[in-house]
Length: 103
Length: 163
Image (cartoon, rainbow over all chains, first blue to last red; front, side, top):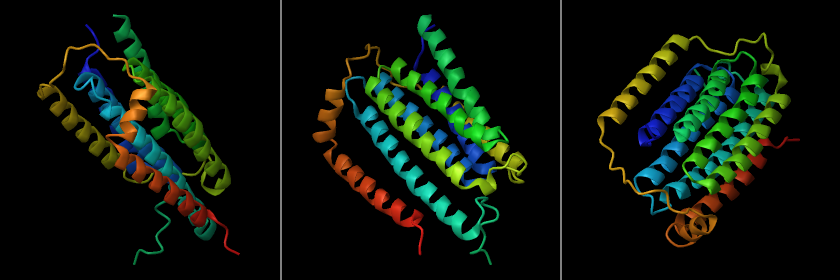
């Protein structure tokens, strides 16, 4: 039995669901960002696996995986800057306590 | 057979630390568990013969993003104590949602016949990817560079201490 496309898709599904669980249940903003990184990694595995098994002649999947890695770095930088700003003004990084706009 | 063994080992290296990331009570342990997860994904890329993406994954994810996360944990020490409750009250709901979504996606994966080509992996190289970036995907490339610049400036302005 060789490794096929389905193996990679199942792996990325499991990784995505773990990331989703982390995003839905964590209070700490940094931990929520970690969950988002896991989900982005799952998407990247999908892109590269489809590139390898469906269209091996092109590099479209790898190209977009690289773009997603770049955007994940941007998202982490901006998100963590927001965490720093929120911590300085509200002195908490728990999302259920950041409710100043909640009426 | 060797490929399957390598895949299973890499999948375990990816998934077991990922479980620690989302369940650990200690936020520093979560952040450090991200590193084996990212390295496992790197091995998956190498198994898919995408060596350039694997290199970038090590540099940016395992190197830069993990260090960034650890720095922010260090700077926001008020929320990182081990005795601080790290999960909110919707753990059962979140687990149900994640399990159901995973079940649905797996159902779709196994019921679809994928148009897999039997061809072996061609020789991907950094030169091929670079040529693709500057010919077919040049708009994507330029917009990404713009996004990088904007996020650099935006992160600096947001995180700046206002005096």
